[in-house]
View (cartoon, protein in one colour):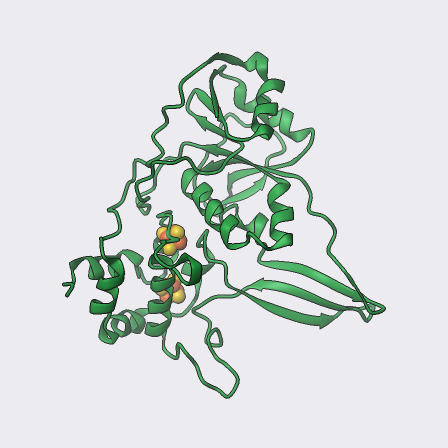
Length: 319
Ligand code: SF4
Ligand code: SF4
């Protein structure tokens, strides 16, 4: 990894350079005061780098993605994704991409999108909702902007810095602190044992009694990745299959043939979400996929907070 001090106009020049080969997007605040990732057609001195409501995940694992079309008995894959560059990705969302890269390691459509996506990270300005865990290794990025310095993390990033060589002043040590200023409390030790000993039905059902089941917390999460399949016949009579985001708060999420529902109440669904986020499932058991972005806390209309669950486990006794 290389690092350089940059001249004041590095960012607008980077944008120009990227626009030659990529569709460039970045955070833009709308008139409704919501920050979203939107095309950045030109540089604005007032460009802000707030946390967008939906993360860069939407370009890697879109909410509704065509998987294939069948025509005359043959399967046609979707057209290749365009080359995109996302500028201003905060560290928490870069760590979320690292997690998704591993979840979708064997998924060719995800990998095709991933190799066409260039990531420009930026030192984030924490909000009152975020609580990033401590970090000692860098997340994945092509370039990372740290105030007046830039770091390159891939050969693609190196190439961009070569193209922008006249905007670099001098090489610097990579001494960035990857732990965000909004560092939250680390996960309690022995989390698996605490979970087994303290997660009582009454605790989850009390929270479930407040939950509206809207699914906003899961929809905004940069690491939630459950999906469903939808098949339909298009206007030309071809069968098409889509992958669409699913949500563990939807009533039919855990409903199976025969009518059994593995998570019949909102309390059971909140419990499932917390287990998935904090303890992980399958090969990821023991690894939290919560990057501490705080989006779920901000999005919940009734102020249900994943930290409530964490505090409950932290304060509980372990045998
Ligand atoms: S669980 Fe909440 S705080 Fe954690 S990564 Fe998901 S949205 Fe962010
Ligand atoms: S955002 Fe809040 S109310 Fe909506 S499903 Fe999540 S916990 Fe329930």
